[in-house]
Length: 135
Image 1 (tube, rainbow, N blue to C red):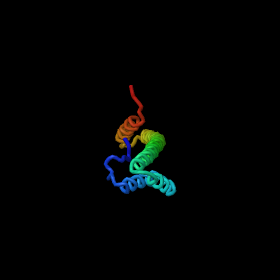
Image 2 (cartoon, helix red, strand yellow; image 1 turned 120 degrees about the vertical axis):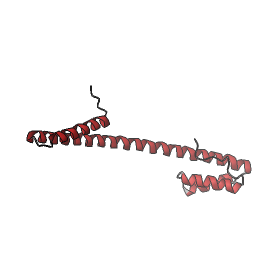
Image 3 (tube, rainbow, N blue to C red; image 1 turned 180 degrees about the vertical axis):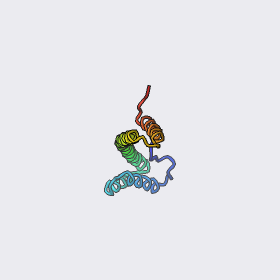
Image 4 (spheres, rainbow, N blue to C red; image 1 turned 180 degrees about the horizontal axis):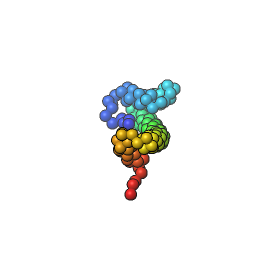
């Protein structure tokens, strides 16, 4: 899907150039590049304006598509990093819960069964989040 399209833009030459200039600005073209577009677009007749504008709109769409791909790639990398961090933290929580269970077991406190139940529920949830399957 293209982000920029001349279809539907007011056919007035200044409206077309304004639309293309804005698209170029939004996709990171420099002022000099935008001025070059305007000069090239005004160097001929109305058909020339449309052909030049189409060429530059295509360039804007290529830049926009590349930027979207880069954002998705960065989001995937960030997501993978966050997933690894979450797994590490969950594993650390699991170790702490097991340590609590062991301490409670040693002391035979009256809350031992409750602690064991909480530990088991937490372990099951952690295993589920980590994708660990039980027989």
